Image 1: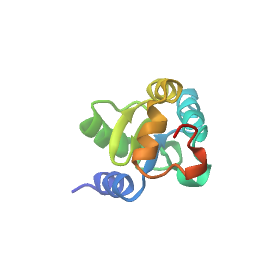
Image 2: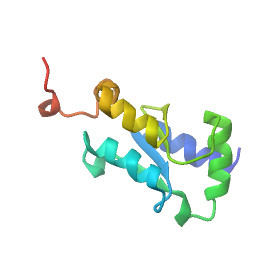
Image 3: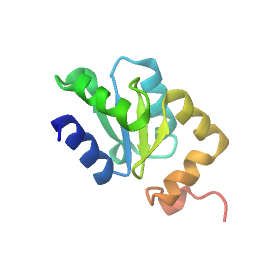
Image 4: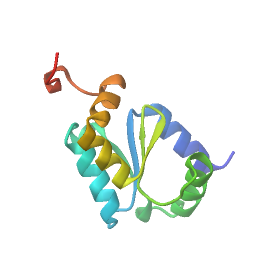
Length: 114
């Protein structure tokens, strides 16, 4: 098993909200902003690939796992939900909030509807 695979698998299984990202990538910023509408930064695990020497290996495994190696790759509760545009769209149509609530990461006071 490659170290990259091990890192990705354990990060995804150990954290409810994970974004594989590059610090300078506008789509990554977009994906993070979408998540940050609902969550404090402390609840979001960001793996910045441009700061790592195994970034390419991680992207190769993300390609295997998700069918794409472009960043960001966003995972909620172990499920790949898409890239920056996808995450932004899910934030706008209310589905992201439902996913986060189902994952147990949204706090009670964020519920607008009962």
